[in-house]
Length: 487
Image 1: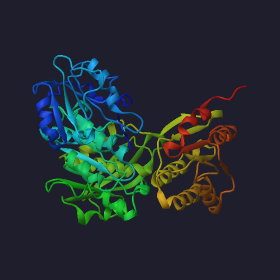
Image 2 (image 1 turned 180 degrees about the horizontal axis):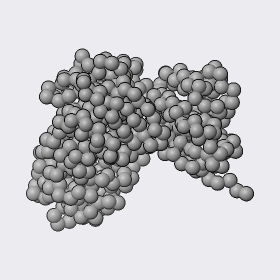
Image 3 (image 1 turned 90 degrees about the vertical axis):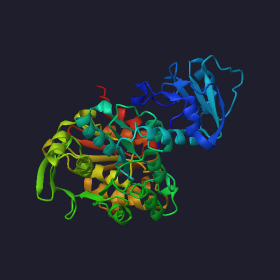
Image 4 (image 1 turned 135 degrees about the horizontal axis):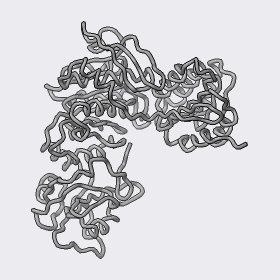
């Protein structure tokens, strides 16, 4: 999960938005019990809150967030020299630093706790409808799809969304401090890597609507059991207001099990009978996206979307469901979804010798791995060539790791003709693939050697899927597969 901190974080889109109007005295009151001291006049007003001195401008509020690699307090002198109106710190005063005219400081016991309190208070100043998006897989794509759909009605400038993968308590708090009077809807991605975290995120973000995409074994290493992980994911549906709506993916058994725990009415979506919004006749249009029929009761509407891969039909359904909750007609929502371009992490790039590379190296979970292999199998037959895969380890699976990687290998055996594997769990993937009947399985301890072997094997019209958890580093090897051979 994202850990934005001083001197490292990229500026989120809303940071260009001035006019925060945060008074030092108000911030002190919002911080409450975590406050230690106030230095400066209560009526000092900050324009924006910022945790990166590279993008700080005169009049901003600088908050000294730290990480394992950097102490945010090391940047306080630069922030004050750069014209910060006031700073939020837990250490004061910095050595050799004096406040200039019109500058101040909030000295708190815990900077992160102060940030959360401040964000909760600021959120209360702008009680616009928000949607929280939780689940173990598909959150970011769902966030982007929902935000793009809402922007079709309200305008992109009027939609606040959590930038990048700022989906933890720190990231969501920073995002909420970007709320301004012109915002009409907020879209908040909610991640987790510890028990109870989703409920905490919901307390700060105060979503009216909650979407749960799917429950995955991803992050299982942080939880004693799968049941504990599910309990944490369920925190979103247990935190919604009575006049809100829990929008749940009925195609996922564990998400379906959250229905009795919802504190708001429930709206289900999926591909099976009995749901409130169902997709039927789903067809892939390759790299152009999906087509399906969305049925709600007796109403049926054809839907096209730029989302790529059959597995993302539930993402499209989640966005349509949210639009219905927001008062749209199904036809209006479908028409808007067809028009919007949705940012997606999967890339299709020309490869060596006239091949195609499916670059899906951003991250990986068991569900997203299997879905990517299904997309590979859906690749248009008329384009000829072989279907191949270069896969690496999926991280954070805890005690289920070996089992999930073996299962991945078996699915790969049914989806491709040649498989390259690397990373700590390469043997489990390879064993699963061989057990599934795949003869051409190539395991490499060195990922670069695996990429070189891939490059040597690629021919015209071949398609190669490259996917692993981001920490494996396969993204750095994709250029080796897209460079033109010499001679």
